[in-house]
Amino acid sequence: MASIDGLSHDDETPGIEPMQMQKKNGRAEQKTTKDEEGPHRSDTNRLVALSFIRPLLTEAVIGYVFWTVLHAPPCYGLVLSTQVMEISGYEAVGVIWVISPLLCGIGPLFRFLQTKYGLLLLRLGLVCSLASFQFSNIIIRLLVLTAGNMCAVLLLCASWFSTSAYQRWVFTFRYSTVLALVTLIGIGGFVPRFMSEQFIAEPQKSDPKTFSTMMWSVRFMYDNNGWPSFDRAATVLNNTEADFISFLESDASKPFLGNNDITMWMSEKLGMYSDFGPSTASHTWGSNLFSKYQIVRSSHHILPSPHGELGPAIFATVNISGTLVDLLTAHNGNYEDSLDRKLQTEYIANITRNSTNPLVYMGYVTSKPGERDYKQLTTRGRLKDIDETDRKRFCLYIMYRGLIRVGYARISHGGLTDTEIQLAKFRIPDNPNKYQDNNYITIQSEDVDPSVRFPTVFGKHYHTHWWGKGNYYHMNTPKYFIKRKPGA
Image 1 (cartoon, one colour):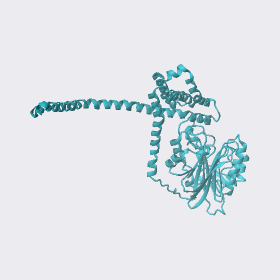
Image 2: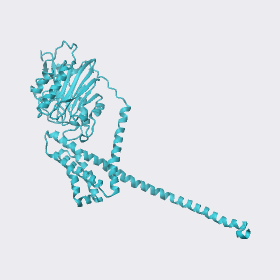
Image 3: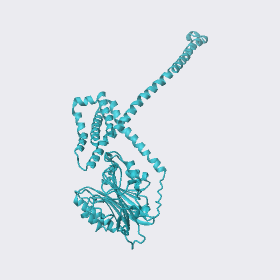
Image 4: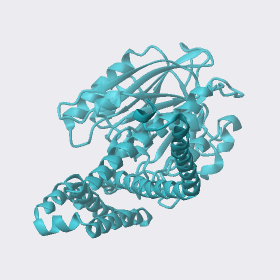
């Protein structure tokens, strides 16, 4: 057996031991190599992570700039039209959205745009167009922004149809991931609102039966130069000390108007109850109602419009110190659509005629005092003008029934919109079946109780139109209504 095996037991041990020693040494050398490579490998991983984060942040910023520039021109075109109250011709820059992709049909140009130099040029143009927001002239701002919009559309096409897989990934990230991230951050903003419940206390007054109303066409909260006016408008509204505020042309919950929720923002800022209607899907200009008193019920109405300009209306009932008072705010169509305005005014008059509570109407009528629509409200609607002697009005009117008028004021817009503010004060009669209205007018604040005087922050009585900066009383206001003749 020994000769067949060729090895004795003593010969096997020396043969196996060297092999085991080699394996042990090999494992030890491998462990030593890994230990030596550890720091270098971790440095490489960090470099890889940094090389990924930098383009990630860059594309996130470019994506944000892209969405900012892409949706801005329609908003500025609308602001320009409302500022000059006509189609100026500059709105035609909107065709850039249609023409820009056609440039990609030029082969050499499209191939250049797909190169790194072409993409860099488009991104520089996109970012530089943000400077448009610093121009005070809205036309120059619109033109510069349109140039940036053209770069944005060409960048979209160059990335979308790129032969580079990396560029297509960049496109997917910019238009999907960034948008989703911004959406999630925006939704997160609702958390503090739901966590803290807002309590609105009823105003404390020396005469709890007095209250004030105001109306304003806010033009979607953009001033006459196209800048957002939320904070400035809120300051003015607080200074009016109005108990009820009516907004018209206030539906900014659309992409081309900034997707702004004016109702929620102003309600939280002013600390007031709010109502908005009809819904954005109804495609009206929008109307809001803010109240320092609890809103008992409300209904939203779309005024009839055969010619297509849908007018909004809110009819609400509020509880003022135990008395139910109805409030109606509405926006009629343009002056050019006679049939629209006729049917809309008849609709409004039917609402006010059937109201059984004291009522205040705050409306955009587009009619001069004494004309057809004005008479429809005062006759069929059984309403009384807050100041029938004020003949220099065309759009805004405050009317009432079942109340005692106390004061009336008109405040200049100060460039925040193109429409003034109208403010009125009323008193609820002790006996609704037997009371006397205030039929005499005075411009002397000393003739009335200090508790019903208008705030002095807007200046004093002013006879003509105030064209200067700031918000001031004008158009022969403020004025007060008293039972006896002044000086008697």
